[in-house]
Length: 225
Image 1 (cartoon, rainbow, N blue to C red):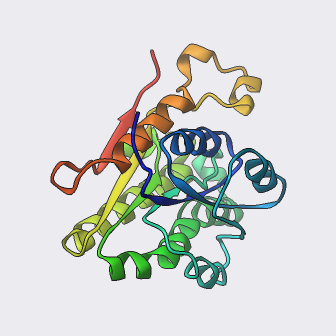
Image 2: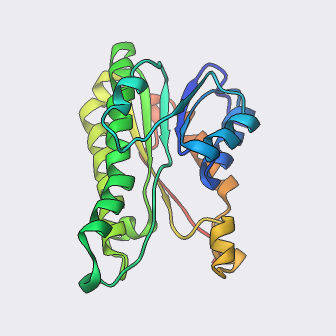
Image 3: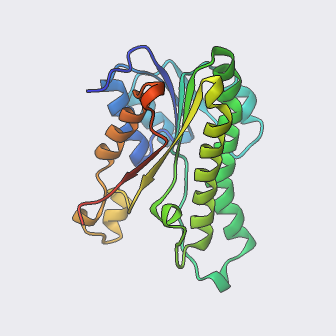
């Protein structure tokens, strides 16, 4: 079991299936949680997990940055994201905005919120959740999703290379397949082809506990088949 008893960790997308599994793992490891989310999902997470701070924020809004800067955290685990498919020839401006706003803009604002404190304390970790399509740099019928998740990876890894000398590291989590969620089960996906969110959560905790001289920058997690 990872030990995060001295860490305060901001978890975005609170109440989502992956975020819930991560929150449970982090709580079990002794971490103090700052939960960031929206509406009913956030309320559900707040009822289940104790948190030092609860922030109901739209992370696509630049105004969210000021609210985040009022909270001091040691790590950011950003799970906000969205998935959609469309044929490339049928993609619209709305599709483009939806993918890049949800997958990349939210990460940008979250990082801008937590980074000043991390740089002052010369310590911190920023984790973004990418996707298998981004790791492979190919997502047929999901080109915009793939591109936006590839942007997540490039952004976090670039931050790592820029800021590691100042104590701030970056890590990208790649679920190399669909995650086992009620929505994916309802879509008819077979359980053995889905990734256990608890396993993903343990991978997150593992990355958060690595020392500087043995840090992890990319984690690829696969389903059974």
